[in-house]
Amino acid sequence: MVYHIMWPKNTAKASVLLLALMTNQAHAFDLFEAWQAARVHDPQFASARAGAEAGRAKTLQAQALKSPQVSLNTGMVGVNSDNKISNAQFSNAQFAGGGAGTSGTTDFRTRTDAGLNLNLNLRAEYPLYDAARNGSAMQLNKQAQIAEVQLTLNEQQLMQRVAQAYFDTLMSADTLSTLKSQLVAVTEALASAQARFKEGDVAVIDTHETQARYDLLASQVFEAESNLQLSRAALADITGNLDAALVSLPQNAKLPMAISGDLQSWLARAKSNHPSIHAQQLQEEIAHAESGKFQAKYSPVVNLVALAGGDHLQGLGAHDADVSNRQISLGVQLSIPLYSGGMREARYQEALALEDMTRNQTELVRQQATREARTAWLAVTTGQGQVKALEQAERSAEIKLDSTRLGREVGDRTTLDALNAEQELFNARLALYRSRYQTLLALLNLSAAAGELSEPRLQEINLLLTAK
View 1 (cartoon, rainbow, N blue to C red):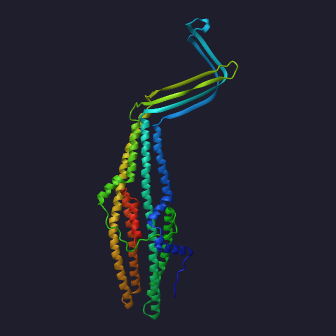
View 2 (cartoon, rainbow, N blue to C red):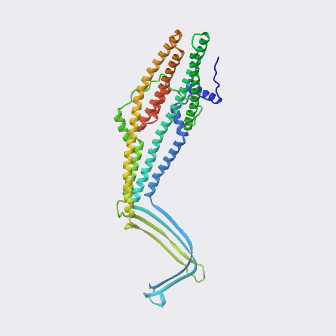
View 3 (cartoon, rainbow, N blue to C red):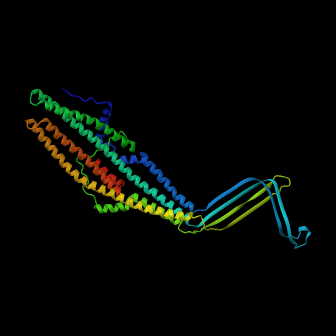
């Protein structure tokens, strides 16, 4: 009896994808190219870039707070006006028939029953001293710096996300390839067991055990093909590239077996260089500036003010008066807040509490950064030892499989023994693949925790993939 697997149409696509992933390495999509594509395609990073651009505008806003402010006001209203001036003093040689030097008092009255009042005023103001305005300008500059730090953090996180998705795809491809190789071996073992059973060399139990192993592997292959498609789709969401072959990690690749510096040096660098800590320290400075804006109880505001303009009352009736006023002024304006109902003191107390909150948040972020560095450092050091141990485990499993196969040929081992030995070899191989990828990711995560993840570091990892 011959057993066949009927592959669904969607699994055929996965097989083609696997073939594309594992062949044509010369034109493959490597890790660094994936990162460059993600910088252009990834919507999350595009959002971060837009946020940084918005943050840069804060610098212009800070400059505007220290620049002259010019405003123009104009309007036209209907007016019914009656103005009277009593006891107006005058000195006029020709007034009321008086001679030279005649002086006295009189009353004046202007009346407009229906008229239009036109006004036009130009006002320019330049801040000479304003503690609140200066504090706001400093806060805006700090917010612009936070935007740049946040963009750096998003760049590092994008590198980590690209590497995670890239290695997940490679691991899925390795898993599928390993399972298919194992399925081929079990298929051969099943055919051999059936032939030997017909000849009476082995019991039927060998055929049943091999068939059960075959059926289990067939289901695992279906699952692995699905996982490969999902992993590649996740990578495509970030990079926009769904079909290009990926560069796989060579089986004989030698991972870096040492990292510069001990744990304490990495923790110290994380405490001082992590982008999240820089951003939080800037937030703390912003909170301090906010409390400074209300610290002085009677903080004055001094402005240089220039004003030019006037108004014109145009009478519409035959006996309505026309009145014009014009003025130009330049001077210094002083404002002192004497009493605000307790608002200024309340704002100051609020700012002090928020400043204390940001100090505690800075310490929390610092603790999180050191935890990330510690976790990544342990993952790197443990992963390096684990890779070395699994490489030896793979060699031992290969030797055991060869011995078991020889024993089966001479009758000392059963088909199930050979299948179990094959299973041990493939399990060790998959564990080795997984450990390699996890160690490489840990190296990137450690650099990110110390604020040192950059394109040169990503290139170092990429060279391991492209090395022949």
